[in-house]
Amino acid sequence: MLNDSAEFGIVGAGPAGAHLASLLASRGRNVFLFDPKGAWEKPCGGGVTSRALREFDFLLENASYPKKLINRIKLISPNKSVVALAVEEPFAVYSRQILNGLVLDRAVEAGATFICEAVSGFERQDSGWSIESESSGGKKRARWVRFLIGADGAASMTRRKLVGIFPKRDLALAFGYNINDSGLMPSNRFATDEVIVSFLPGFTGYLWAFPRPGVMNFGVASKLGEKTSEYLRSTLSEFVRDYYGGKMPESDRATFFGAKIPTLHAGGWKDLRTTGDGWALVGDAAGFCDPITGEGIYYAFKSAELLAYAVEKSALTWSDATSRYEQLWREQFGAELERASQILPRFYRGRIFGQIFTDAMVRLSKVHRGTARILVRALIGDQSYVNLKHDLLKSAWRVV
Ligand SMILES: Cc1cc2nc3c(=O)[nH]c(=O)nc-3n(C[C@H](O)[C@H](O)[C@H](O)COP(=O)(O)OP(=O)(O)OC[C@H]3O[C@@H](n4cnc5c(N)ncnc54)[C@H](O)[C@@H]3O)c2cc1C
Image (cartoon, rainbow, N blue to C red; front, side, top):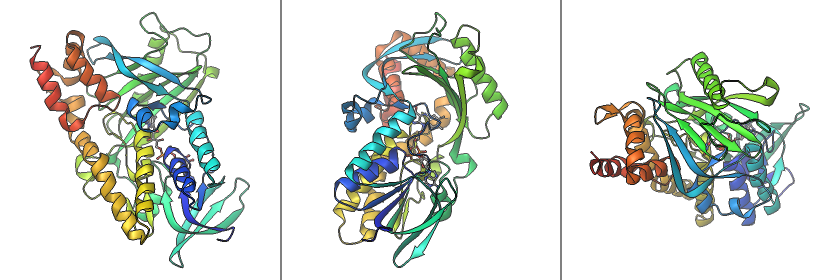
């Protein structure tokens, strides 16, 4: 293989791309991994669910990459009722720079070639792809790969060129702050080691406060176009002020961010294209996020794992690998995410027992451990959406 060619070209070194690079390289495959930013503070809550920690054990094994382990979630309902719930198995909150660094370090250690450049274009060439990338100094260079993987996130250029962008209805808009909170104290209604999730009336999404080592991450997300950017930003500022007892921390402590999250509508899953002749998409670029919680890190790792497995098991043809990957992701999480898309409007805006669904769930969680357990499990990725309605109703009927 020439220096400027490789078997795989992966665009994007976030959780999906870097994890895929590490899996392929550790099996002796030749990989180019492109990202102009390397490990960076990607706009994100950084919440890594208990299920992700369980399935991707390298996360907890690497103690030198700091994270905060969380044992409690405080839920605030639209009518301001509050319940604090214990989590059976802790989940973690990471700085995204640290998490991305962990996965990228593993990829490089496994033998992937990391190229700190942005991919600016690609085209078919000699039964592979010619990829053009650009350094921060503006120098362009072409390389050749046999198989192309788009792991370049929700605004994926790879996706745009191969399939087209996500339509507006398949996206959520999120804003957030990372606040250096050393020396700052939350108001006495909150604790420093708990995650806060606050639901609002008439709102398909939620506000959050996630503690990281030395930093509080605050955010708000809702369906794109549902609320104006001004509304989201002012609601978020009010939430942050409330957290710190009525006063916004000084601006030099705060970094503001905004980004989109793929949240596919229910009909979007059936025809979702994630593969084609000599290419595949993973992670956000593929559309793999939980539309209810916005969780995407688990699906980034999982889709990378499934694609690496499909490649390994399909030595004969690329089309065998891509169809196996399609089949695997649909079986292992596609049906679940499709179900979440179907439930989404009812989860945030539906009514049950004459109340807004989230009001009713918080109220029931206060008095019934079974409901609390199901709700917490849904938020940390351990409750199947396929059974959510059935399980909640079964537990709720025991109370009412
Ligand atoms: C505000 C917000 C909060 C969130 N909170 C959570 C949370 O708490 N928990 C959770 O599980 N999920 C959360 N998510 C979702 C999560 O951030 C994503 O699902 C996850 O990062 C997807 O990983 P990825 O590797 O597919 O893409 P990304 O992490 O987006 O990585 C894509 C990479 O591609 C690179 N790239 C882009 N273009 C190019 C190019 N042309 N050439 C080369 N490289 C390129 C980028 O620099 C980036 O590093 C949140 C999202 C947002 C926006």
